[in-house]
Length: 554
Image 1 (cartoon, rainbow, N blue to C red):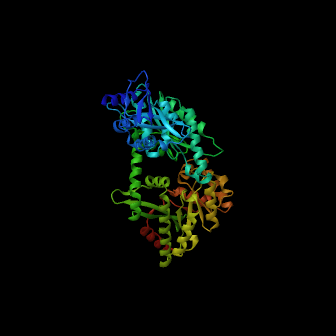
Image 2: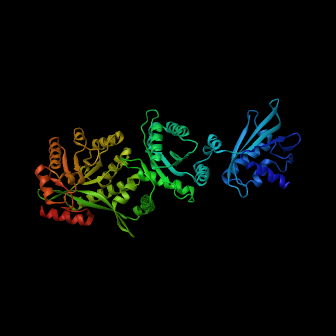
Image 3: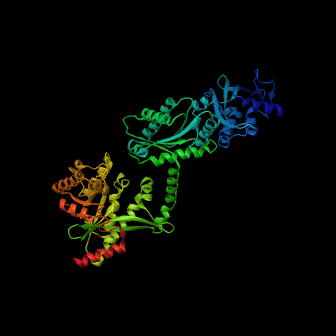
């Protein structure tokens, strides 16, 4: 019997051979059908093709439960409906000294008078790659098992086809959650199905693709030159770019397979790292994995691992940078900034952790923490009888997604009983973001004094001043310093200041570092500045000393 069992399983490993069998309920036997490739023999009920697979076939763990359910249904003829013209199950099996492969078993019930089931015929065969894709096996699994299935196909293709170079491309839709929130999950699912359909048509037989998780897709392509990869991505992007007039864009990460022996998961993760790193880049949406990105992502993970405990342990500290009147060098206000004082590293530069927090949403907690620190400090000054100067706090773009931030600000103002005008809001102006503009207007209608941060650095321009709700514009330090280098640039600064004053908007110049810059601003009519000429951002106790000294002079 062992020879019979081994022969049957071994035959199933041959792609060209179909193993035919039938179940004769009346004779209570399972039979292998005669065909030119098989010896003539009958297998008893105690040992049939189904049990052979379960006992001897070394089924993949992810598939065992599904196959056992299928086998139980097959054994119990009453569980098979007369509407079941055929029942199909796919599974992975590994035979000794062979690679794990995909197989498919199909059964065809034979009813008498649509009620009696005397006979079932069936086939078992090794599946081709085309069949695996056309059966859409990957979609039978949840995300974790999905990745395992696709990894099998990737491993086989990349490691066996050594004549070609391969690239692993991972992409997703930027802001897909916003699409779901705005149009509903049903439309979101339609969009994902649209991408899958485009991939089905666009990808050749030499390519592999799968939706890995949520809106994340992975494609494996052969290539000769880097230009082949760019051409493929741009063509795919164009093919997927329109669906029901919904606006969306993609981020692509690419890993060039140089070592075929590293794990398939590492290849996919590397493409994912490149995809994540490229987000936020306004000029490019294709990123290639390299060691710089790897180190950057390692730092990102370190930051994310520590951020919650750091907030809980008080490692985030508010610093204040004074704002000065150029004419008399008096302190007119302060900007609240955050510093992370790590017990091991010391001060962590804000440009290392703020972009990470903006991407993962933790910036909301940081913003609100600094808001409360500022309100608490204003209350302290009022209690001590010091001059009431305003503190401006940053409102991140993430906060502008909904109106919750207004409620939080209102709550803090009432909690610390401070005048509303002493808490100013600094917001970086955005373009083509209707929701953000609505939130900015809501903050204005709520009585807050608004400062447009980084004017001149990106989207903002003179034309935006005509209808802006902002009370103050802050001239960006880079825009200011670069404009000062030429006569033409100085005229632009001068006209910006003049125009703003004419329509009643105040100005503050950031990044003032020399006395010449300060005098130029004063001559142009801008009398407010902050920068290293006056003071760097300082701890609160040091700022208190500056404020007290300023108060005594007055």
